[in-house]
Amino acid sequence: MLAFSGIENTPIVNTDTDRATASNNMGGFTEEEGSLVLPDGTSLYTKTWKPEGTPRAILAFYHGYSDHCNSFFEFFPTLASSGLEVRSVDQRGWGRSVINNRKLRGNFGSTTTVMADLHFFLQSLIPFTKEGSIPLFLMGHSMGGMNVLYYVLNPESPYHHQQDSTPTTKVKVAGILSVAPLVAVHPSTQPLKIVEFAGRIARHIVPKMTMVQKVEPKWVSKNTAVEADIINDKGVLFHSTGTLEGLAGMLDRGAWLNECYKKATVHKRDVPPLWVGHGTEDRVTWFEATKKLVEGLEWHGDKTFKEYVGAYHKLMNEPDGVGEGMTKDVTEWIEARLVKDDA
Figure 1 (cartoon, helix red, strand yellow):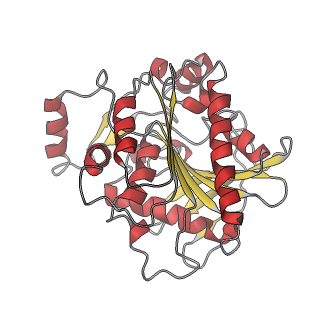
Figure 2: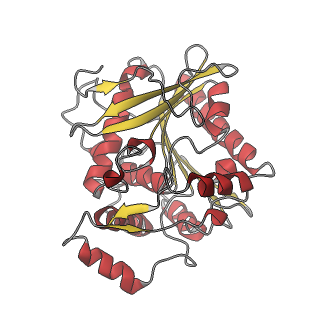
């Protein structure tokens, strides 16, 4: 228990044994489930994949819209087997964090709330870095990929307002990894402008009103097991529901990223090394918008943009060696920055 946060990091047993098991030994790593209690009392489900021995780095992971942290198949176990400790959370309004309260589904909050939750999650991991001796990396997919980019690029983010932080609360990120970020929705699936405009107006009147914005399972991955996982879930964990406040804020953050490289408002100091990957055939988020953003960050001295030809949205779950290749790319990129830190 951390004094400043009210965080529980001890494993808990999940009674849903078909989906996850607490503290199971699985070939060189262990899995743990737990909870993270936010300052407002909201409890979030957490999942950790721990390697044997001291980890070489900690990777904090943020999932995307209508997703949860147990849906990435072999990605996290593979990273843990390579010595990286993965710590993930089902965000406010998503996954197992709201599995017992349907009223909270999709209530993921305004941009201020989303950024505060992300910052608090990272603060909760500081004790596990052993006073900074274990580097902390931050990774996100889809909406989560957008959130981690916004977190380090926007000057109003809590990441750039830590002047009063202490060594036990100041977040230091060794690198950012963003997979298929929601910089822009793919043109083929973008909402009509009139619908988007009406939603932006309505969020000020009925911010907690919810609406369903479904992501077509067939466009998430070419891996049929991924599509089946979403369909068979029947809207329990992949519930596709968002409040008007949350959906509008999500689009606002993407719009800011889509334009930030053209403006002086982007934060250019203390931005960590950056890795971004996107599939060229992604029809959920837009490959071209992501590529344009990364290329537009001309001032950034340590950035990598990796395109995966023919791949869909959930790169880590793609078949035909794409997922394995992307996992290898991520691991090698992190390892290269560990070498730099040791030099």
